[in-house]
Image (cartoon, rainbow, N blue to C red; front, top):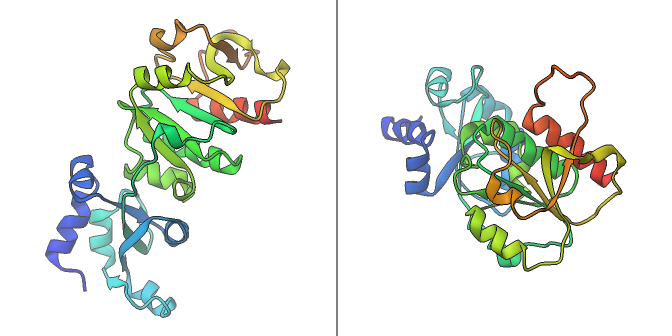
Length: 245
């Protein structure tokens, strides 16, 4: 049975400072847990209800936790019957990024649900690298983990200052496209297989720091003039699917 100290530790991992201090994070739900087990993330421990343990008796090392304690830990309104702790993995450096594929740069993304959905979309389309600006939401935030549905186990996410990334990418001869309301119609653009796609903050969009470099802009044309904007993760999926065709 789970101890009070273990329960306290699990609850602490909902906060970024304790995830960083212990270099660990929580994954909820067996399907997502399996994705991380089958990846290069290291499993630390599994906590599950007695019902789940009885149904999955081939998983012998699970620590029993009751539903009431599970609710105290979980970031979900309706918790799953099982959760696991994994060690964070060492993030790759910019020098090891494969620019023969499309690479995504996300600037100051604040909504964990958006980041998780973008990670999941990248996984669906076979993209394996996202670079986030340093002020973007933590990839190990429970809501990012949940909305990515296991895809984080297959997609590399790097954090870099915007200045450093721009300096790095400007030395490379790759296509650079910025999602912006004033951009070219993405539906009329040719297919691409490599390059860098820039997406900005949910409310502010791309910063002047990126705009001043004069990269080509792309947009999704709207049919209704009084509709202000699309959700970031929705627009990301539309743009990516059209560029990959």
